[in-house]
Length: 151
Length: 380
Image 1 (cartoon, chains in turn green, cyan):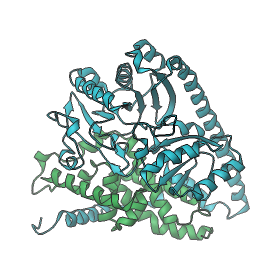
Image 2: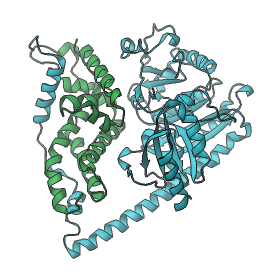
Image 3: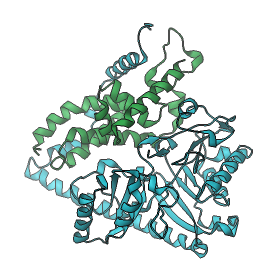
């Protein structure tokens, strides 16, 4: 892996937008998503010469950042931001992305990577640090909970 | 919505729309990153780099000293309970502002009867907010524990004052090397390297891991020594992975088979330079269960039942109970997780921890931060 700042510039340009969007879907807060991705970029830059696969490393950093952010944050916000069932109507369709925020982090991350990023199960497993066989159940449980919420 | 459209399609479309609706602001990147990017491009900025490195070094040293001091304080407190050290073990982990404030271990012989609440007071800190962990040493105790938790529903103060109780890690072995309480079933280990380990010792550990037929993979962490004794593997940030060589800190092994856990742990413990080894319960298999008030017995919970029960909340005066079942037979929980609604004060969480720790059925109490969802996972 090259260490030139030019390489990092290209990497930054290519990754910053998609990673911020993904982080936003994971945590539902654009400000925090920016912060998480910026922090992750710092880490990547700091290890630019050592990291063999900066893309994967960045993914992991962003995921961890989102998870940490979720821990620190009061859960009140996430719950209160979900539209109440009584207010849902044809005019106000259920916001799946908000309901998603109520899921356990790994389920949420697996769903976002699968249905937004289009990642394979193998890649999701790599990103989450689990076995590929775990990804299927995570996605399945997440979808089941989504269905339940929608119904 | 098109009736033919599946939830998967709808979710995919919805996420895409939502993601594309935001405007990514690149000017909001942390200025430090910008300065990183410029470092080294000119001699002047190169000097700034060294200033930055020096400043970081000072910060790291101060942080490490602080953590070491905190650990020392915990060690002193641990002496409180060691008078009764025999078979039972109690641990307390308190976080303040998401940093470890104190780690205390107390060993108590359950045969001595109920814990003395005054003794509990002596080690309980007052600054913790977050998670409390109950861990039973046996199925029998787990059964007691369950009845204790049931009673919590009748003690609204406890229930409402509690934020979370979550599972910890069992990491003990019998004298003959056999696993104690199901340790042999776990397939992951967390190993800590002593801060004093020499380069030769590190190399030996690395070599041992590399050549062990039992070890499938290893992840190395760079962590502060004070973090090594935590019962909270998730606190170690995997983005610290360095991958190539053993560093002072901890590393995480995934074993080829769960039954390898005990012998591998014992072998590792015998290596000089290894400070501690414990089984990592935070792993592959999410086992979060939320029970209904009508759930008459934890003993009925099986893998097959879980999908139908998950998500059904047992509301107890503002708290919900989340429980994991014990491996391998999953007939009874060895840990019970309670999570209160938001707004519980740190003081109230402490009071709850004190009360629970004083119970005879409770083998250990761990207070930390973070939701259950990230810790109630058991290796399949």
